[in-house]
Image 1 (cartoon, rainbow, N blue to C red):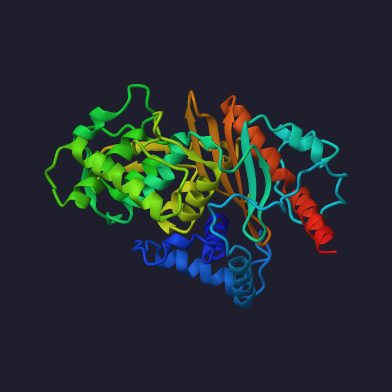
Image 2 (image 1 turned 45 degrees about the horizontal axis):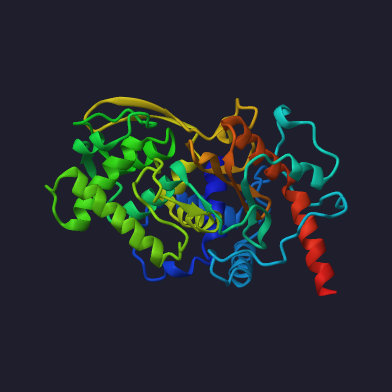
Length: 390
């Protein structure tokens, strides 16, 4: 129940985020009546046990309006110079809510600066929906390989063409997978819904699910229900690239639907932040990015158990943090270990991205370090902003 409330709150926070190129684009409204009811209950009568601090729907509206005004610039732009450089004195004790800490990363550095020097990833950012980017390591527009974070955009584009309830039969597109792909154990001839394919992409990071949904959407795009798998997948990837341009992803190019390494498959942190916003504004994606595990029975009768690759979601993990609602892991050799995370912190939605970490363990450690540093990052940002205003 708490997870559903966090998801509904995140949807409210993201409702008016500036992703300017989405206007006029059709998106399936896949929110269930239960999700809408949860959203209303948050804005009208929050429980004292909730992490959210909203007192009324007017407070939610005020927050969204403030977010829209603050974030009026296109989200794919490079952060302004107002982001602190962090050659700063230790900030005062924070009054902002922080994550629930686990024993795994319990030796907290004495200062914010010491915390940030622990980040091993080559590229990283921290974003908050009210203040934009609070911290950057590397450059927001530097080229990175997105690996399986690609699947967030695959899901987003596929939902422009496919009904989540539609049943798809897996076919020859499975032959297009690389031999060492991560999979959701989908076999040729299996019949499952589009929604299950989304789940198979977003939990176990199934490349097979990505190709099956790409082929299904490609046939719709081409209006050729019987076209061969390769032609259908290629049509879908071409469509991903067209959507990317209209969504302002100017530093991004896709070569496949699963993120497997290809020299012409790349992005940047700025664009991937936009992708994360688009994903979070899509209820059917948000429904599964924060799900820790699931047992699924296909329409053809087969049963699969899927576990989310994001350790921050598992309560038995040393990296678990309360309030985390997704989003997606990624890994290839050239990309390194990657992760984009979204979390509710008080009345703010926070996103953390780490790219080219040296190991899976390090990407989770880096993310936890940045999430736990969020209150101090916020204080440093606000202090620097106040200083400039004065």
